Image (tube, rainbow, N blue to C red):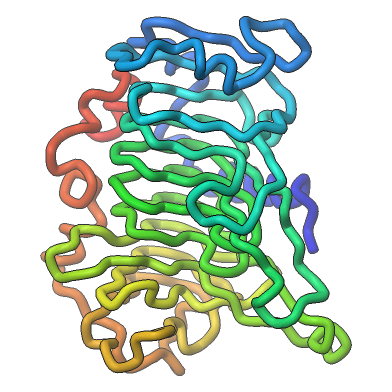
Length: 352
């Protein structure tokens, strides 16, 4: 298995080699000082306003109406952080995701485990690694000994992530509800590692599939097949879904693109390069084998060995050009009410 350092190095190499993923945005840490009412500096060595992130969060008044930035100096923060719903408009920023790590060893509960839970609207994170250190991989009884271990829990609308890394094994990103935008992020996991009922676009992201095995499989050289997504759309009226736009899927494991967490599950991969970590069938119905016609699973303009449609399930959707545009454009899918225009000006420039 690759170490965190190796994974982050691969991420950096990919982003710098693919200029469309980075240089087109032209974002630097200094850009995010615009429109910020107050900056709180956190350093666990005492060279800041606070030693812990939660202490900085606790200092922010409830019903805050101005953008407040929590700037994290380099270091590893072993914390369990909660951002309550009454504390909106928080920007949490580091300068380098490989040097600013928020981690915690906590597993077993989908809604509360992990280093951070976001219950507030208008949350922004920039250049930070979120890691659940409960990363047991092998030996295991197939699937049963791997615990739910989110690196982040998103339980609110209107969140934006840039240059962040998310690391765990199962349920890495608990994208539970609300509209979210992930740009230039790196997501590591093995089983259902992007899951929930969120309405989100993952753009220019690297999806890294970790290999998991069992004691028996280790002896035989085999590997369990994981799942990148488990999306929970519940009806035709439900607007939720996961869209992966211009991403890269790689890793040292094997995985389906997704399995149905609910009977109207919706996941779309657009312009994504897929390595051979993607299993030929592509998708799994899980507990909804008699309702596959309700799913919206689609791949559009994807490339790479894993994008070969030979062996794919027969119920993948062929979406119209109109439907594709409605899903892959942020203004159509996650910003229909214009909430992104209320972000700090340097972020707004990405969309308008």
